[in-house]
Length: 64
Image (cartoon, rainbow, N blue to C red; front, side):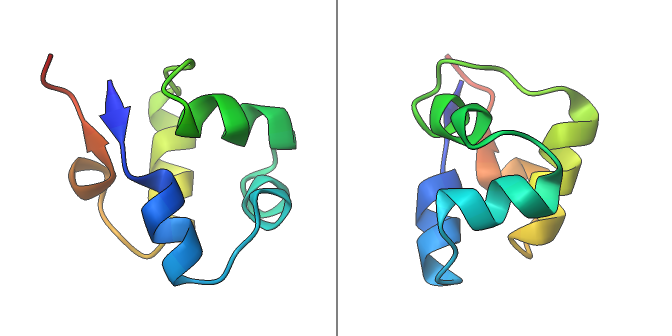
């Protein structure tokens, strides 16, 4: 699953630490999400999208 987390995060001038703190996860989780090495739970995907002021479907690409 591809994502645009880093793109949206940098638009808002957030660091990985900032996003992790706001989402209630470790920075490593954000690193793995951005590298598409981790598929988030629906709740985490929702929380990250909300923090980044976008919708889940704009943030994550569920196509192969």
